[in-house]
Image (cartoon, rainbow, N blue to C red; front, side):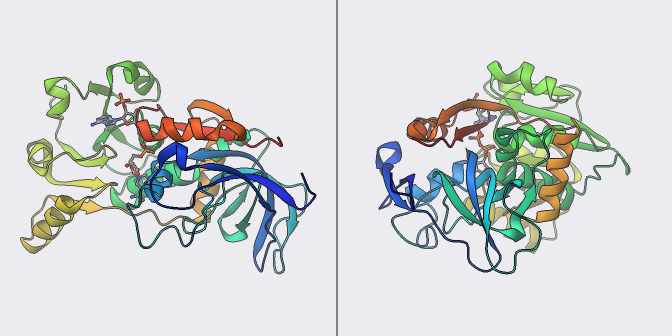
Amino acid sequence: MAENLMHALQYSSYGGGAAGLKHVEVPIPTPSQGEVLLKLEATSLNPIDWKIQKGMVRPFLPRKFPHIPATDVAGEVLKVGPGVTNYKAGDKVVGMLNHSTGGGLAEFAVIKESLTVARPPEVSAAEGAGLPVAGLTAHQALTQSAGVKLDGSGQQVNLLITAASGGVGQYAVQLAKLGNTHVTATCGARNMDLVKSLGADEVLDYKTPDGAALKSPSGRKYDAVIHCATVIPWSTFDPNLSANGKVIDITPGPSAFLTFAMKKLTFSKKQLVPLLLIPKKENLEYVVNLVKEGKLKTIIDSKYPLSKAEEAWAKSIDGHATEVMDSSSKRL
Ligand SMILES: NC(=O)c1ccc[n+]([C@@H]2O[C@H](COP(=O)([O-])OP(=O)(O)OC[C@H]3O[C@@H](n4cnc5c(N)ncnc54)[C@H](OP(=O)(O)O)[C@@H]3O)[C@@H](O)[C@H]2O)c1
């Protein structure tokens, strides 16, 4: 391969799934003002990556075709752009690329310094790459939307976390248990032991009648629901909520927005809160540090070399991965 070319996977139109991803050689990007060039060590996939390919956020994303997808990366700094003061060649980092430009399924990527944090040696590249979208969403939902204090202070909060075996759910269970919470979690039967081992106080199989009804085995009413599964109607949540209970919906569809508006307009004490991730560097530093301290784990479903990243893509689309897929970038 020529010196200034790199291997990458990209798609050139909406749709096509894993088959739409093509292996290509493209120029290694150059870092601009405030950017850093990384040699990627690991990339994790999130459902938003294939949802963008499906056209679910068109016409906003991606910004243009062809598009190299994936945003959550760990890598080594090769070169810094003008104005970058915090990093130098050789530093190991974790960061989040922009969804509009992507760039993660490649050997190299440029990343904004403002969403890049140092990766300590105690945190592997794969553990770090799992954190940006999933870890930050869990952190934002718990701390900002549900008001859980992760230092354990404050009154006990009864939480329900749906799809607790998924990328966001697993971090949410672990982070929630740093606070003063009682956690009920839902997942499939095969993941119940895993979710318990992450700290959930009670776990429901979502395919059982009680699981589908979201009923707490100990009879608790939920002060907040971190809703990571898709399409559960308000009528299922409502009887399980405490008087001021909130559903924090991380995949809000049209009916969720309607419920959100209705609850606001009627001054309902029970609320639905749609959540959109606003990634913040200080929160990424916080979760990376928790992994370093052994207080937070990234559970990796499976690892693939970049040469087989389309298999990771297909697995993520299938929706039954236990957590992130890690596509370790390797020179081919
Ligand atoms: N709003 C935002 O900014 C934001 C940020 C991050 C993610 N999201 C969205 O949040 C959703 C979750 O993301 P993720 O990364 O956690 O997904 P994921 O890792 O793909 O989640 C897959 C897991 O969810 C479980 N699951 C599926 N349906 C379930 C149900 N009804 N009840 C309980 N468990 C269920 C699956 O278990 P089985 O295999 O047993 O079915 C599987 O373990 C995605 O739709 C994603 O796009 C939104």
